[in-house]
Length: 133
Image (cartoon, rainbow, N blue to C red; front, side):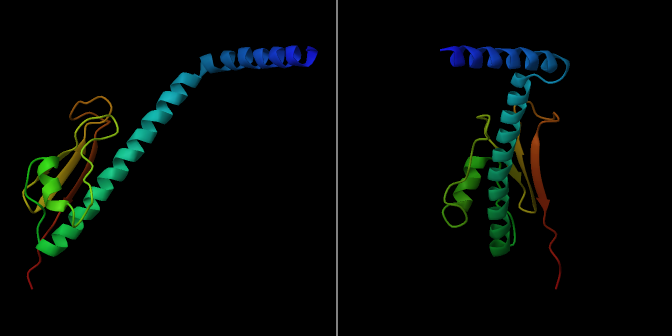
């Protein structure tokens, strides 16, 4: 019984000491929130890179990118030959945005704030320049 009480007291003292240090810097909750955001950012970028790899393969086969203006339209071009499933949502639940005129494309996630044109947007784009033989 005494060992359990000593252990509880030790843990309590450690927690109190940690709280004092965290107030001057980043709190545990802030670190956790930042870690979750970075994890979601990484997952979204991974999905977006899978789409861009499929787009590069499509371009090699067809000499152009799929010319369309939504991720839903794009999935019709890429499945099932280039991807078994085209990710449509980012990690924050927002729909990925795809735009292409056939020569270049832009793939966009609005990030956690869901606002276009802000620093947390994730954007992948490519330009294909056709070379004459």
